[in-house]
Image (cartoon, rainbow, N blue to C red; front, side, top):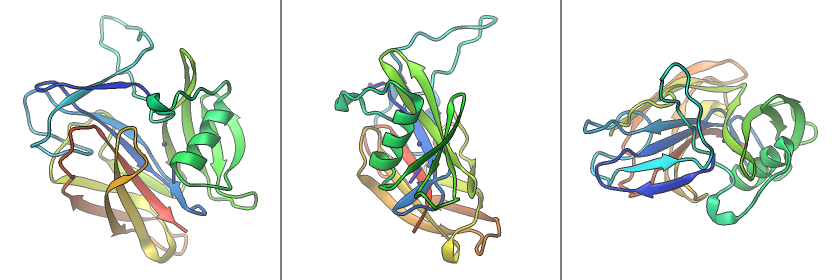
Length: 230
């Protein structure tokens, strides 16, 4: 598959964060996009994971954000490495490859070109299907914030959208037999809490996909993974 890290606290009445990942083809699974999302204050949930009945929570980062013109900056919560793993990475490439292998299941992942804070990942030495992993250097090392695949694009939900239940998911993709996989994972876990499929384009032709799901009721933030399995 294809994919952030920060401390996550759960407090009633506060906001709950969400992350979205989209993956393109791989040996196991590849990713197409990742998005961090939040609950609205006192309103219904919109956008990427969680139900209206779950306890809200907030996601914070150990790095100090900067402000511009008095605006409150959005600090994206890293998906990888998990805070509980006590892992750290000295290079962007190490972080991206570890994420691809351990979180996404690309056991034969190959690192391509690094372009600033973006690292190309391919599922095998011969594969051309590309996932771009977005990384950032923070106190303690490099972390993964998200990922985008050439063959899977998630249009909705978008980063920082509010969560809803049911949750609408849409975008553009191509996959073998047009089958696009969906997973919801609890933040800080690689175990799917929800699985489903939807249909997109096939035979290399990008086509639209859209579906609506009911996220599980959990007291932790969730990560949405959209992928093509091989």
